[in-house]
Amino acid sequence: MTKHIRHAGFFCVLLLVALLVNAARIQIVKARSYDDNQANRRSQIARYHQPRGDILVGGEPITGSRDSGEQLRYERTYRDGPLYAPVTGFASQVYGTTLLEHVKDPVLSGTDPALAPFPVVNGLTRARGRGGDVVTTLDPAAQRAAFEGLEGRKGAVAAIEPATGRVLALVSSPSYDPGALSGNAAATARSWARLNADPDKPMLNRAVRKTYPPGSTFKVVTAAAALDAGVVTDLDEPTDSPDPYRLPGTRTTLVNEGDGCEDAPLRIAFEWSCNTVFAKLGVDVGVRDMAATARAFGFNNRRQRIPFAVAPSTFDTSMDRAQLALSSIGQYNTRATPLQMAMVAAAVANHGQVRSPYLVERTTTNEGATLATAGSRPARAAMRPETADRMKELMEDVVTEGTGTNAAIPGAIVGGKTGTAQHGIGNAGTPYAWFVSWAQGDHDPEPRVAVAVVVEDGSARRGDITGGGVAAPIARSVMEAVLNSKE
Image 1 (cartoon, rainbow, N blue to C red):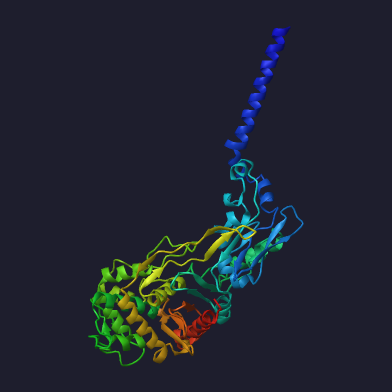
Image 2 (cartoon, rainbow, N blue to C red):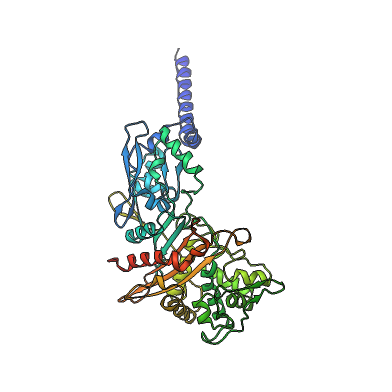
């Protein structure tokens, strides 16, 4: 009898061990597959069971959480949703997350191990901490000035602090309200369908995810390359530049919008945006040095993040001399995001140094304790310091007596460059209006802001749209907002 009891006891122990092994297999080995199974709603319920952390601008939250009383309890809310949509993106119970809501989701949702007081235990139990906060670098006044300046027209604005790379404004227009996508009701699906069907693409982040022909604003890069290469040594020395200019190896001639560009010195050519002078300068510099300078400014960088990904701005590295001439005036295959062109202006303002732009100052717990900071950003030389000084001089001339007078700010030093970028088949499309600039207040030791503005403005008459007339006033309002900021 004892023998049978012993065998039965041994068998029960085996069953218990098998049960424990299977439980461990399910809890540890197979946990991920069960978590990811679409039929398992536990993780989704847990995700929305507590309020999400907030995104902050100027020390104030621009996001929140609303108790819906449903199984997926908390829905995301947005203050001034269209104003900040190009920064926050959306956090939807149905359609996922984008932009900051996506890249900082571990902190905001509370799953980041740094938020757990006992990360090992929380990792085994998969318990969620309270969501943390994301503190942005944005200047709320600059953001609003950019948004209101565009007035709903298609376009974008990017503003950065030259000395640090802090993104001060990032606006895309037309915009949308991310809160319309937060929940899981039928209205959410209708909003999603409407936004995706809208031909104006309000969910497209034009500031960082769309590239444009930069037009004459690219002449900042070409002028810097010519000065660095020694092709131009004196800003006031006449250049050997015919008007019209015949593109090398072709019968095609390039002309200018105005007169006075034949053999114009670099100062005059930059001030009045002479295409013929800059096309020839690009050819004289050569494709290798032009591409190297463009790369130093940030073109052809496919890894840039702020922290979400930025579409690469491009400058072709293999083209003939005629194509190089057109590329050197921001046409042919040259493409740039507004953020990239703000970096170009910032490099001039920052003694030729480019700082990688960033949008997140720090992440914190919900009680304000710092989890991580942006840290120092390495700088790279886009041009020699003496070249940057001469470029500042040229950009100041554009604002004081050239095509960019609409960007002038009383009591401040402002430098700028206008651009009117042709596009479409046979350049038949309404040109894009560009303006890139930087500004330094009366009592500032260095420039405090660099801005790039592009306005697509498809409703404008072709002759009415220019960088100086349309985009420069927007840049001016953004620069004024930053210069008037207490910080």
